Length: 536
Image 1 (cartoon, rainbow, N blue to C red):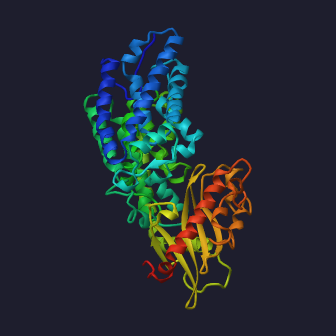
Image 2 (image 1 turned 30 degrees about the horizontal axis):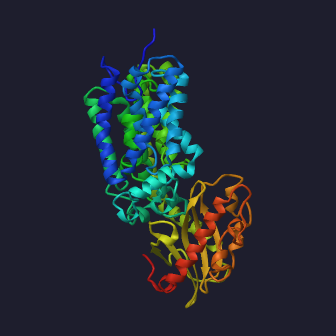
Image 3 (image 1 turned 60 degrees about the vertical axis):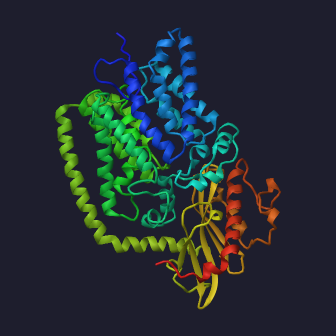
């Protein structure tokens, strides 16, 4: 006998698919409205594009399969899939990417496995991950929150970016989770970022915390209406809170707070609207608890040590693969024993981490300082300075440095003489996103050296910006605003003097532009950089 069940979330009882999906859409409306208010109204355009191509794809596949079209389109399940998919996308994503992702989600992730109720993976997340892997540069171009109104695109810029693929660099920035990951890769401490960046709000990411609250309210409403059960949302949020608390208590300088994890990124949306897919989640209540707990652990793991700032989609898809095993091996007694063991382990680990952090705090801080010092010393010849390079620094904020966030400038001095500055800067438009670097500049404006501190460029191509992979980065040594000339500060393909890489022009082009802009920043603020009293 064939049973059809709707794409996430799942209903309990005998309500029709249409009725359930209608309630889900109602639950999505508050979060979508706050998304428009706090983040960007461009999400509505994403939803419209995704819905149109989802309906067209659904109709075409049903026709090819010789199945009735109108009942499937009328149950609204495909619209919910498109809506969830669109909410996961950057607001200014080109229309063709949105279309490609949702078509893949409907045709491959849903109908290739048999259609509604047979898909082993959440279709919306499959489409999202396809785009994230295939078009990382587009998928990391998030707009600034509306609270930073001077950086928000207008209607004409939005339409141009979505339909004509015009430049959007002036309006894009990393998400708070991405900014935190980049900050840590530079051996900097999180409190310096969270206390001074407008991207961080009261308890989570600015703007996103209110959107997350709306997802939470919508999710609780679905539980109250018995559209979903509490097991998966509570276990996802609970396990994420517990594991992030353990690490946060152990080291507040390098781990985000548990509340920030809950109210940032796609945590709430994933816990209530995505992970609750009945087809891809375990059937038993105990299995759902295991499923949700492991999703929470995976989210924290990917955010902390993975290659992507947020890990909700990957966590859900990984656990979708584990669902058959969970259903097969689940036993009530096993889950009770496992829960007790997990609770004892969590309590013991929290206590152990607290004691360890207290005992090793000074050593950890000194190790971080030495790592940063090694990066700085690599840019300046030995014996050219005698001051405390790490602590003689100031924080600055300037668009020429590639970010709206505060960045650090380190000053090198020899006695009373100003020797050089080392500026943390960003190339925001690398092939796979932001490229962070340190640029050393002598007092006379010549470059002392450039080193890449973090990037996600393609291995074997764009990663040649690393000194360990090639000596290309050394070509900046000794350059200045005067030599080469303004028009020569480009890669050779664009008429400049800097080499590009075979098959990878975007990466060196971005680095050259960032270094050039850093020199301009130094020229504009030279006196202030050396004379401003250092930050405490």
